[in-house]
Length: 544
Image (cartoon, rainbow, N blue to C red; front, side, top):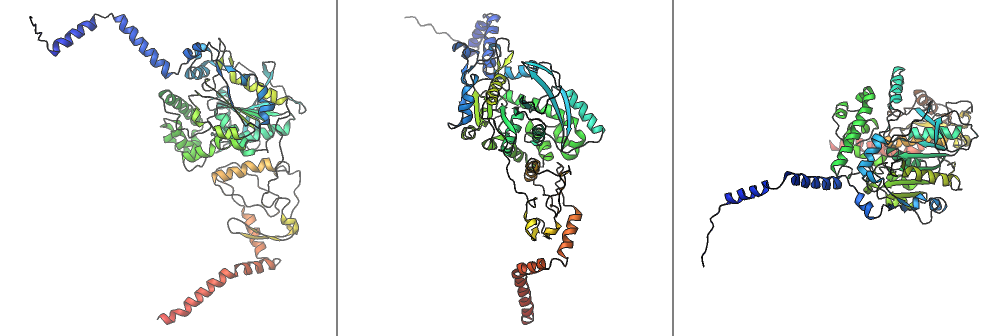
């Protein structure tokens, strides 16, 4: 047998391989790279067109989470056809990122004619009225106070800019006239919503429904949790709420970081409109260098809102901790593939425990996308919300405001009318108040809260002072007059005249019982102190 030995080096092997590779047509390489790119794009953009194709484009079933003893479900949600059906995404938008992007660039609302109303109650608020009838939009021409047609209040999200030009003009007009305020909008600011809802409730007999998308949903749920039964809202819907502002999953993917960056740019543009105030109240250099929402909140929001840290702001303003106290029929819709408000932040157990909350989740939908149909002309969440509120309006389960008796210090029905007593303020000031010193409050005094509006007026002020850790104002001696409280970040200081009046009453001869009471009450402390100093002084000579 003849043996042939081939002496080949590694260099010859690589040269042969390169020759073989060069023989493959370039078109095959391009085709291979194209396939790899499509697979990467399909996975990174989370396309689900193949899944929809395999299921025959029937869509995914809608999942409902509710309390088994909920009257809202059995009387309202169970009759909603859309909530018990399936949701099919527009085939050429079968990606949460494509839906979210399409909504931003092409999903604009139809052109409408609206009328703006400027309210100057305690806050400077602009209301945009749009009248709707049979899917037609026309300008607001006025509503009769006896009209029972429902009024829907929409709380805008973070990037709502349909009237941005008007807002810029209004901001210029306000600064020109010197109307400045240190109150800025944030994800937990509910004062403007409270003012608008109370105003509409006082002016009109129609039931009020509230819808909040995105950050507006977080504000809505937080407001409903703060108010409980003491709100005139008949029903509400929270769409794609972030729930937990401290969501650590918001930037886990590259595309989510792009969303974060885009929203940060929008916030920086908002801060640019109010640069003089932000420069004074916050860290303007840090705002300009912010690369994420967290950076912006750390340099701007927490300073303006008087929060110790940015995490404190997130904890106190996240709606997940308030949804358990909601007393209004509330429909919550969230998409599990939402790239902005992740599924991990949804408070599943809290929504299931509350009998007034119906949590609706879908497999797809993106952030406020929910496009459906071949032409993507409709949005599923809009139709589902309309159906829920329509059935709620025809049912006996609409919420009605219940007057909650809140006992405030020195109210009109306090112990002033029952005889003299001691009033000890937080700063240690002691004052004697007698029955003859009470004064009647005229009902014509518009600067004072009326009895029916006391709860609505004082609740936001008390909560604002609690969260911001500001000092409460010292009540006046008649117990009814309350200084008109401004929504500022510096708290409310007691007037000098009130303190002087307290000192005069303390030193007055008309209150000998007060001095006696103080002497008896403080005798154990003063007696022990005198005995200690006397004993110490007596022992000093012995030590020498």
